[in-house]
Length: 313
Image 1 (cartoon, rainbow, N blue to C red):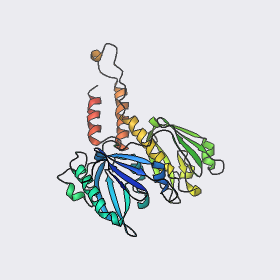
Image 2 (cartoon, rainbow, N blue to C red):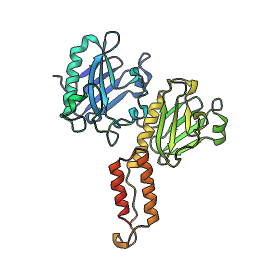
Image 3 (cartoon, rainbow, N blue to C red):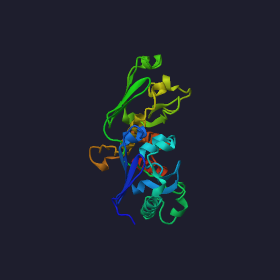
Image 4 (cartoon, rainbow, N blue to C red):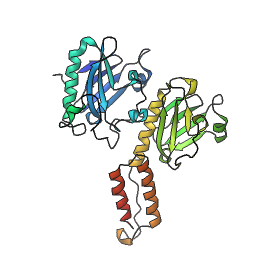
């Protein structure tokens, strides 16, 4: 068996097993996928993984693939299955002659996952060796750390900036932005006013990043990305892979704000001063319902918190 801390080097990346996590370090260079070069390194707790597979690759290679649990990684949550195989950060491509070494590494990681309460569990783990995540409970929070610090990228019709915690800003380009966006002006969004992020891969002709406002509700008339002031279009500018990292950081900040405890004012006279204002309780239940519909609060959390609020009346 391999020892913890041993490194398995592949093409464009290397894996290192720690006692509680898989550390993935990405190469940087002309031939390395741009997303890998921008990510540099990721630490993936074992509880964030559902399974690991080893399959034949192209042109005499093998592919070691760690499959993340649904909802565990903000990057993969935003990507929503749009990444091409060559840009999947959980795939390690190896020369075929390293098959024995790869098998040992796969088996060791499988053993760690099978005994971990956050993964498939020993009882049902054998059914997940094909890379499926069926039967694996989605994570109730992000387990893989999001990109840290300020983020930015330049799209076809504007530049997006995120301070890393609380505000997202869009600055329109005079050469690419539509007249609708120019009329609306540059935009600044508070993370607290957002409930999600939509990302459409720059690999297509209609790639974009859109911020979803919390109180916007469903649109009766679809707004095209090039006319939406809450949207930056990639267009012909090129594969803006920084935008995926940007979107993951914003989504993680939104979830953090939603999970932060809401300060509750204690009435003068303490807890026994009487029931809460019904209007205030109703507003909090309405806000909780928005989080539930956006998928940011589970059914169980919604029911428990709603009952708690109603008990305050």
